[in-house]
Length: 168
Ligand SMILES: CC(C)(COP(=O)(O)OP(=O)(O)OC[C@H]1O[C@@H](n2cnc3c(N)ncnc32)[C@H](O)[C@@H]1OP(=O)(O)O)[C@@H](O)C(=O)NCCC(=O)NCCS
Image 1 (cartoon, rainbow, N blue to C red):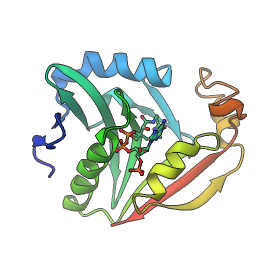
Image 2: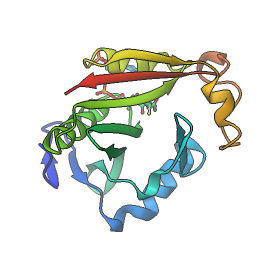
Image 3: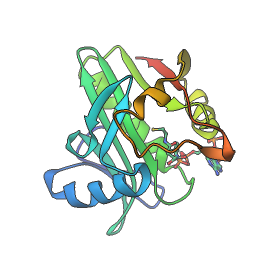
Image 4: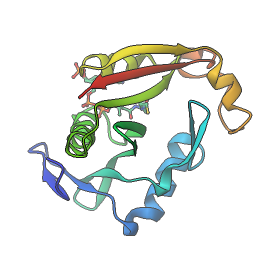
């Protein structure tokens, strides 16, 4: 699963990121997350420097996931489908899960924001559980990343981080 290239059987393939991908990865991160900088649990990541996977349909990038392994934990730092909901996000998640297992991780985790109900649905349907609510973590993260909007999906104020995990 976690080789450099995986045919998904869904009209796209998934490849591990290489240094050649850096420019378009930066572009995607800026488009979807405002900057290449991500803040999670108060920690700053340069997401464009992280390992990850991309989904490709021909020459078109249609999905991106980045992750960070720390000891026996693997955090999904960014995760985007760039072309609708046709299984791209699930395939990218499967690749990270496989890498995390191969590298001996016991836990795959991420934070999402309190407004992101589609993400809560997506991960819970894929064996993740909510393990913590970090109240006002997003409010505090604005001190580190000023681009975080005040209001998120469905007009919901963005204030908190929801931590979700999958035991490996
Ligand atoms: C989370 C995300 C990566 C999932 O990728 P995806 O390609 O949509 O995932 P899949 O196609 O494999 O599965 C999507 C599921 O949501 C459903 N779905 C349908 N319409 C949807 C919509 N408008 N929004 C979200 N999900 C939708 C799909 O039917 C599928 O349902 P299932 O759980 O019953 O299988 C993607 O929705 C995304 O880019 N979200 C924005 C960024 C984000 O919030 N990232 C997560 C936090 S880092």
